[in-house]
Length: 81
Picture 1 (cartoon, rainbow, N blue to C red):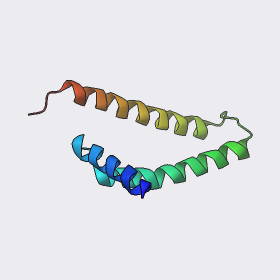
Picture 2 (tube, rainbow, N blue to C red; picture 1 turned 60 degrees about the vertical axis):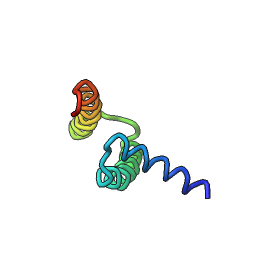
Picture 3 (cartoon, rainbow, N blue to C red; picture 1 turned 45 degrees about the horizontal axis):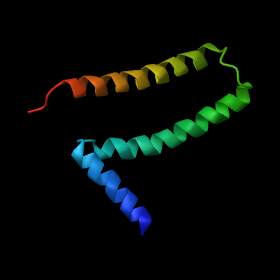
Picture 4 (cartoon, rainbow, N blue to C red; picture 1 turned 60 degrees about the horizontal axis):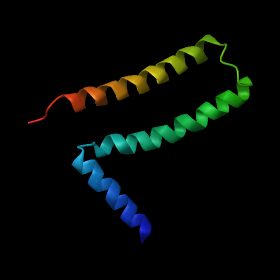
């Protein structure tokens, strides 16, 4: 019963702050896969990010996270009608 309450609160917050539901589902599905593969890659490489492909992927992930945060800050600054 408490799980339903938690999901209801998350749903209300998503509606209130106009957060897209489809993006949440895709993020949950792909995020889990990305985490699993990142851990596996880290273990196989012995914790080294010396290879160019690994550095490029980490840079893309970092820029993606930073740009998402920046977009959220810009949206807060813009007054919606």
